Length: 316
Image (cartoon, rainbow, N blue to C red):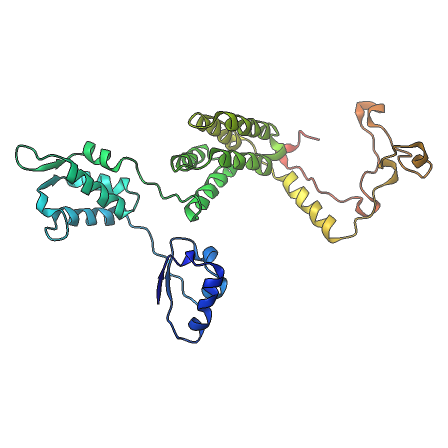
């Protein structure tokens, strides 16, 4: 039993197939353009062998186009087309590996171009570009290509490659990605990967986020490029990020003790009689506005959460 676009079956429908697959009533073959590990039930996946079909190369598409313009039975061979290999290769490249896009382009070109004096339909590069309109980019905002591109975008920012950042940003914008989504990812990267090595990165990213909300496309591309490039070129540190995760782990998994009495809140005088806020040293009363005193609970004294690296040594 062959099921095309099997990811469109909901969980109950996929579950209904299980007993018949298990007892051998059917040999199930499913096809999907989505990632099966996310869109198909784990129970079905565990009973299946997954084959990934790779996208066609430009050379593959060119061969299909070459057959289409020469085949007199199933193709356009009877129309008297005059189209060079260079034009066909250009269409193949612009189709982004999608044969249907390429064939539609050459067919539209053939049917909308008048014959010349020699009785030929001459397909030039200009005609082909007009018929294909816009280069197809493999980018499904709900599929793997979306997540692959945004992953590459973020990792390029983290790795400091501004050229790659602008490339993946351009791919996303060209395919219609939401500028606000991209701006949010830049802000997250500024906090997670740049951190306290350059705290101004988050200020820049947040300013871009707010401005993009007010401005929109196409000008938003400039703000996105500025913010993403700034984050990419900034020194990096994830010390604060690691610190908060360690603190959250400790708070959720162990007895961390109680807040020291001297730094607790004492809104009324009677509470001071019970020890609230008693003994607190106000840092501004001391030289350089600093004073040594215990802030962590007794059980957590000596625990280090924020461990700055060499990019942050100038920060206290």
